[in-house]
Each structure stands twice: as structure tokens, then as C-alpha cells.
Length: 402
Length: 143
Image 1 (tube, one colour):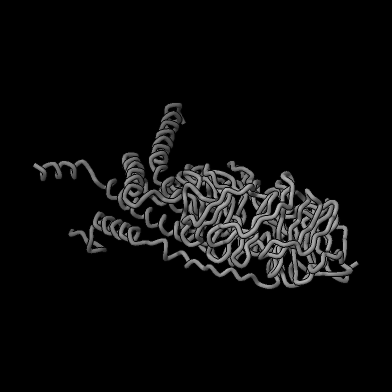
Image 2 (tube, each protein chain N blue to C red):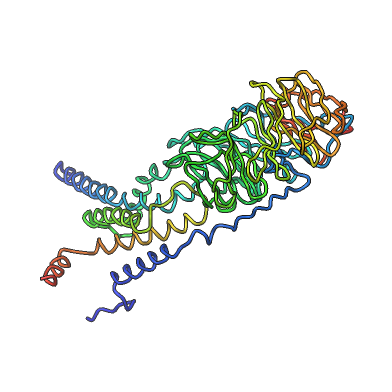
């Protein structure tokens, strides 16, 4: 009986044809089809505080906040603590985000009730291990970005996994600017990495890296120097990673002291505060304001750079163009918070277990409020509410509360 | 049932089990490559070695399904297919570059992994259908 074939092609022919087609597809497949074009615009919505310092420039400026009769609206007790040196707090779209040892917590901004948790814990019957949170959470267009163990994780606004980028070393600085996330870690070698926030695909890498990315403005990423170079601070182009300039400044502790960048000037220092040109790194002015051990923290508005100096127990307001002192105020128990905050009329600083509101013009004390917990170590201000990470508590403070 | 009959039954079952185990070990490479190319790029916040841990159980399940479906691959063919899959994976890595295992959860590495696995499976499928006669025919043609 003659054999009949269902297909006019042999099985081997079919395999060869299918394999060739798949191989051609792999060859033609281009990662750029899946990567969104880089967006350098970093506009932050009015009612949000999505990262330490509020915006990629770490200005710490927002239009309005509580000024008098400031009281606690709600307190949320966390069941664990952050393994780093402060309890992070960021706010976006009515949700307050914080992190503990191996969990991201999302809280309702109005009530403090927990809406979801995302746990970095891959332990299962077949193995795996807990992954500890390494960085503050940062909220971007597509969700939350955070470093856990040796990976960067992207989690959506509902607490579901989006993507994970594995490196070979833990890293603490994560910078999101526009739709790009920057960090320095070890891949095959130490590398500065820029990833598309939407797909997680690499935009560019730079190895050996010039900097650990800390702040961004006008197409330039700045941060403390990485690697073995003599420089201590530098800047790279956000679109290519190419070095723009480097400087040898007396600064240290890259994780804790974030620079502020505004209107073409970078403010940074741990004992001496430097005002550097964003364009070429040249020194516009410098002031000795701190002590070697305690460092400085800055925030900036359109006219003034505010400096908290725990070592000298002073708060300074300096003209941002000349560095001249507009006012200074002695204050005992000053603490370095991760996010100093300034509004159009009030500067918020932390002194011991209290948050203190000072008039932005003149430095007169407007209010002083004790914060429940171990004392605030990070602040965020969104929609008129001041949020503080205080030990194992997240506290919301508003005007008109008792 | 006599002792001989019982012994023969045990021997027969042991042979069947042994043959199935050899098939499992032969196909394990093919499943392992598939898990690392297609499943690993899907996993976010999972143990780094999740796919290799699941390779053997998945292969056992696959072989059981094949046996139940009446498709019982020979030990020789299973091993040729498994080894060819691994060789195909190495060749693909040389031609197209090694898959970037750093990123997972994103669409691009998943699609690329699926396409690469199709290439590898097609290569292994062709290799496993090549018999001694084909080699002889090829040798004659060469002469």
C-alpha cells in the first residue's frame, strides 16, 4: 500500500525549516524594540515625595507643608526594622512606602493602614535564602525600585514583581531620573549601569565606573567617585555614561551625604560645603561649616541653600549664588536626616526626638513637635502632610492636629 | 504463583524501571537547557538555582507523560537528543552570544530564550534522527 503523507515535507525537513526560522528570528531580534527611548525630563508631581530629597536633584523642596499646631495624624508600627542607618519613607499617589529588613511596605497615606507587602525572601522547600534590603525605595513611573541583596528589583504599584537585575555585589545607591535607573555595582567588573525602568534592559554601562550615582540634573549625573582614581567626586553624561568632569574634594561617606543640584550648581560637602558648576565642576564658592565626623546635609530653594551641621549644632541659610550667610541659628541635638525638607516658607530639621519648623526667612522657630518612636531619621513631605521614619514607626504629621 | 514467576516479574519491572531511568537521565539535559532558557528569565525574586533544582522532577514527569501517551523513546535516542541539546545550546551561545542571565521578568529575554530553545530543539531533533545508515550514506557520498 502506498504511504500517504500529511505534509509535503519530511520530518527532518520540517525540523530544519523550523530551526532555521527560529535562528533567523534570534538573529533579527533587537533589544531596542523592547526598550523605551530615554526621557531626561524629571518633573515630579506636586503631591509626591518619591525619593530621598524629593527629586533627582535632591533639592528637598516642595511648595507647602504644615507650619503651626502640628500634630500626629497616624502612627504605623512596623514589625521589623531597616538594617541600614535610618528608616526610609517616600510617598507617591496616596501611598507611603518604607522598607524593613527584607520587605517593602506600602501604607495608605490617609490612614497609615498597610495595603501590601513585598517580601524579598526566596526561601522554599527546595532552598533559596533571604535577601536583605540594601537601599531606600525609589518610586518611578512604573512602580518601586529597590536594591535587595545583589539585585535591583522593580515592583509595580500593586506589590507584584516586574523585573530583577542581578549583579555580583550589594549596592546602596539607586538613582531614578526620568525613565532610567542608575546604580554602580559589580557585574564582571565594577560597573556604572543605566537601565530602562520599563523593561529593565541596559541603556549603557561604564566600566570602570567614574562615580556612584547620587543626584541628577540637566542631563548630568553626579556622585562620589568610584574605583581607584584620585578624584573624590565627579559627573557623567546621563545619556552615555561618559565622564564630564571629576574633582578631588574633601568628602567622604558616599551613602549618607547626598549632594543637592539646582539651577546648574552642585552643593556637596562633609566639612567644607562646596558649590560646584554642574557644567565643568569648577568651584563657585566654598564655606567651612561642619566638623569632620558629623558632615553636612543640604536642601535648596530658588534663592537659598540650607545647611544642617550637627557637628557645630547650627543651621545655616546661605545665598546660593555667593555663599554669603543670610541667617544662622544655633540648635542643640541636630541630627542628619536623609531628607531635609524646605517649603516656600518653612525649613524642617530634626533635633533629637523632635521635628522643628523654622521660618525659611530668618530662621525663627515656628513649631517643635516630638515624634513618636526613636526620633525621626528620614522625612518626606507630600500633600501638606509631613511623614517621618522613626525607628520602627512611620508617623504622619499635619497642621491642626493635636 | 511460583518463585520463578515472581522473580521474572520483579526482573521485568526492574528492567522497565532501569530503562525509564536511563531515558530520564538522557532527556534531563534537554529539560535543563529549556528551563534555563525559557523559565529562568521569567522568575523574579526566586532562588537563583530554582530552574536547576526543578530539572530532574520535570524530566521524570515528562517521561511519565510520554510513557502514558505510548511514546516510549529508546535509551539511545533519549541520550542522543539530550547530548545534542547541550551541544546545540553551546553552539547557539557561540553564534548568538550567551544569554544575559542578569535580567529576568522582562519580555525580551523570555522571547529570545523561547526562540533559542526552538533552535536547540530543532538541532537536537535532527541529530537524534540521524542513524548509522545516514552516516554510511554520507561517507559514500564523500568518497
